[in-house]
Length: 259
Ligand code: DC
Image (cartoon, helix red, strand yellow):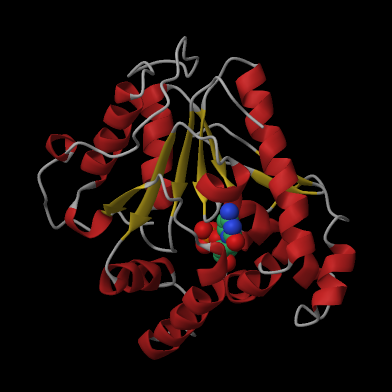
């Protein structure tokens, strides 16, 4: 359990803009940054590389603890390695994207990676640093005590178009194929993608990246954390997690940044 330092949870479905928003907030506030999705992807990459049958939950569960997954927490240079090998490129490919939901749905996998994620959060806090963690279950499972919880959504159309743009270089990723793959992934990820009761729901379809970042930074400030430099609080203020209406920035359709 992590208490007494600034932990910002950014959850939501794929393509809603979590990575850009979470990295932007971490950079602005001088916090660490954790991409938990990259950890599920890294494990999936390793399992695929071993030639294992990922449709068999028992096989995946039996091998989940074998690779050493190391994730960096510098928002300027997100890094992910498996057994010492940099896999930041390969984990974004279609093979991993299409297999990762099945791996992430296995309880042994989640228990193992959630424990690692909680350890990373605890170490950041012990070092006197706050952290922004992005994923699907940060506000509910990894860090239910997080000071700020944001559930980032976007219209189906905006999320699909962003994910198609990500795959533009892959000739196999035709619009129809991409749409079907996205739908399948959304369905498979839904049980893990849970909005905490005390989370603020933010629709990124109608906000610019700067507006989403400013909103999250402002909420952190309202909870008693400094608005720039360092995540060491002094005082954390429990209580309402609602954003006052006048905290919402003006709406603007600008979805090019979603990731
Ligand atoms: O956010 P992403 O697309 O990189 O996530 C990769 C996969 O991992 C996706 O299937 C959702 C899953 N995931 C999860 O189940 N829990 C998390 N905390 C983060 C990601």
